[in-house]
Image (cartoon, rainbow, N blue to C red):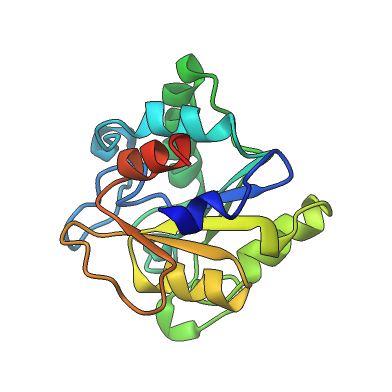
Length: 184
């Protein structure tokens, strides 16, 4: 991962994390609607802890169209996110901000990945954010496309590590990426 070393990541960098499939286990053809359905991916808490020591800002960016479909509410999502943050507290992990888009994919709104609305909101809320010094980690091609559109470095989490041309880095897990960062 010589390319990773060349980035010279320090506290001026920002880390954007997708949620489902990155931080928590993704449900097949369903949405995490309550805390009983939320389960951290193995090693995610420690991995995020390691990464927050490197990056100056930490953001969550997640599409949550279950709200738009009427399957869950904004309050349901808040409860899930509060639960996630409670689970990260023992690891001294605190997101600077959590951004989500409740809109349906068919609506193609600015906030919904692959569009960059959530990234733009982070920059508005934290003007020091520089997309050229930002990394997004996600498990879907829309995460990678959002990162590319915002000119971020992109990390694609995929089990078979097939390298889509769009992604700058491909890893099997958040844990693997945190180890690569530590060793770079």
